[in-house]
Length: 539
Image 1: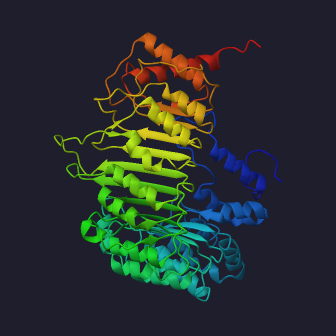
Image 2 (image 1 turned 90 degrees about the horizontal axis):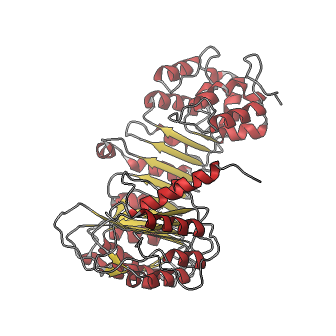
Image 3 (image 1 turned 90 degrees about the vertical axis):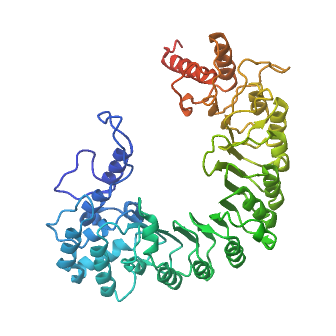
């Protein structure tokens, strides 16, 4: 092992130097400014510069260094002439010089190249970086290797910004590939780029070369056409499919009926409404464990009314509705409850958004939170619950509502209810509900709530419970204009500090108006913590 100290240009690097470099890059020094971005691990240029000294690395360090790379530059540098320094970023000139050197024809150089190429298990490749030159070099090396991929241990590929002119990277597909990301998006030109892409030969090559593929991330900026579904259903072991992409109802039904998904992320087109709802057959997905779906409320409700997913553990639903449409959110929640097993569900995230803002759109009648959540309250093993209302809907709730929720969901680790405000016709809940969470949910670590009436601190009988190990707490008031007196905020500060002594005040985003009721309370807590941490230890 090399001794500590600065690296010498006269000796090769050893495992100690590798670990030292990783630790130095992963932790800011006292000389670094706050605005400097800290990069974790070895930079690609560092790895490329070390390529020729790799024989000095011990086996564990080698595998760590090469297991995941986000550029082909370190590999290319193994075949670069000794006098050619590695560039900061991949350039066409550099790649051409590597190709012209033809060091792959040298037995020793080629052997070292194959030795380290086989250590790569995860690779990210950006076609935008001198794509033509890299494609040419890739083709040369492939032919030199008899048409076989030289990264035989590769298990995951992320191919970014592919184009119709660059399909050469598909030759990296090999039998061991289990996860592939195909991304067709560039800033400001994703739609045009997608029109220029012929995805079919890529999917066909992937299916032929990598029959063990289990996970596919397909990032395309449009609705999935039927021929793409035709190709996807032919992957025999595909179990995980991730978007963003959009499916119509018939395509969704066909896809999930042909493939036994464990995890599925995507969008359902909003035109899959009443005309298709009555024709959606029962969809059985017995092995589905995770689902993320986005659509309008009506389409999602229809989907869950047809879905049977008894093994689903994690569900995220994003609803995007027209502000003038009529929606039935309780029916939507009830449809979810009928589609899943209450005992199995562990994480439920519901987001409701509007397509656009209409200033004078009428607001629907308020919905009691107890009514909305009633169908899913039997999910007694739920650990994560998030309900985020960004639309017109307003909720109403009482302290008793939260007492019931916490008694039913005592396994909660994270609870977030984010809405603009409670409906004005009903009084808001009070801070006493915080004790309901503290008493009933011992594993709770994150809690986000709408505004609580800061003037009403009526503690129930029994006094304060033991201090709770909650880490993150936020009570929203930034969309209200309620202010508090110093006496009121002092009482709340003492109450919360006694109840949750471990919360991190930095978790909360502070607005400019420190007179808002809960902003003032959390600011006081922050000041109190800073004073306590800076106080001398008299012991």
